[in-house]
Image 1 (cartoon, one colour):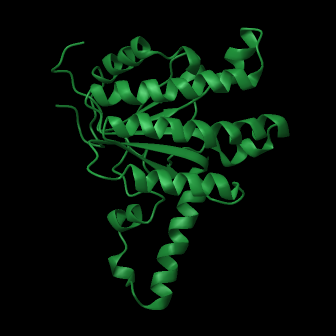
Image 2 (cartoon, rainbow, N blue to C red):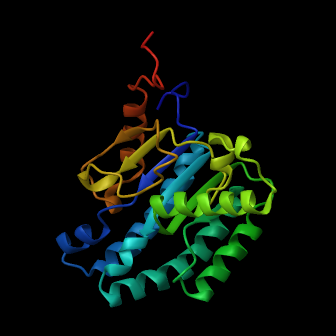
Length: 237
């Protein structure tokens, strides 16, 4: 890939298709999630090598708790164990990990592991991986609004101070807007992911299922990003 190619500063990926991939392979859905978890680490490292500074992965939504109990139980087990392993590998590359989403109803052991990882990987990072677990874009906006309203109620914040920048600072993570969103598996929707941050993002919906979204597929996505002309409401020059 050409070194002079532009890359997004903040890349968001909706991890989709793990279960379908496993079914097509004649395996359990849990096996698909296991392979997908390894792919997240691979793509994170590759993205940073390409010069991307922030990568947000949509791993588990608030609505995913509606899935069969055994599948959710396995996913929680996978989160707790793979997160620790992945954080060690990313730390070697000076990549910090942060987490976005509501704590309730995650298990206390998972919450504890997330907070420990955030502390352990925060020193002198060259890039950030944002893992979205028990995440919902509408919930994030509501939670940010509550934080701001509470400060206004206490008198520590004036209404005139509220603008887009201040609101963004009260989201789960104070990260810049998304430049490029990828959703694997061919589904063409946001599914309640980073609704505020994706306001002017470019979207890409490859048909490949996430366990097959390897570094070659990733580079194809970057080539597509380079074809886009981002105008942010302006007129094409």
